[in-house]
Amino acid sequence: MARTKFRVEVLTPEGEVFNDEVEMLSTRTTVGSIGVLANHAPLMAILDPTELRLYQSDSDVVRFAQGEGYLQVVENSALVLVEEAIAPEDLDRSDLEQRARDARESAQQSEEGSEERARCERNARRYEAFLEVGSN
Image (tube, rainbow, N blue to C red; front, top):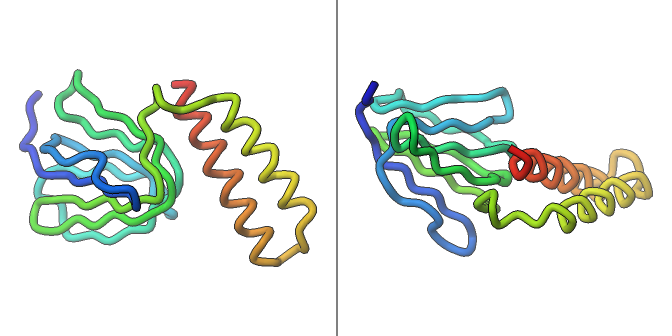
């Protein structure tokens, strides 16, 4: 079933990784999963690491391993600003596994409640989310 399309732009610090029309955007915010269709109410959300899915049609889905960031929906368009947006085929499983291990070890060695521990825990969650995206 064809849906009305809307513009989605995905930006990282390195630049634009996607800019096209889609039927639906699917991601995860800090309060849960969200799907955005055309004519969605204005929205601003903080994004957690997950799989970003951009449905250009029912059978054509563009996927990214999405890092932390923000989602803005306004005037029938969406802007996804994230630290990273990596195509699943570009993920290096062994590198991500090693980074996740290192981050978990660093978190355990850091002082409880410190910013260093929080940073290491965020990194571990991001690498684990990327591993999940790569295995789908």
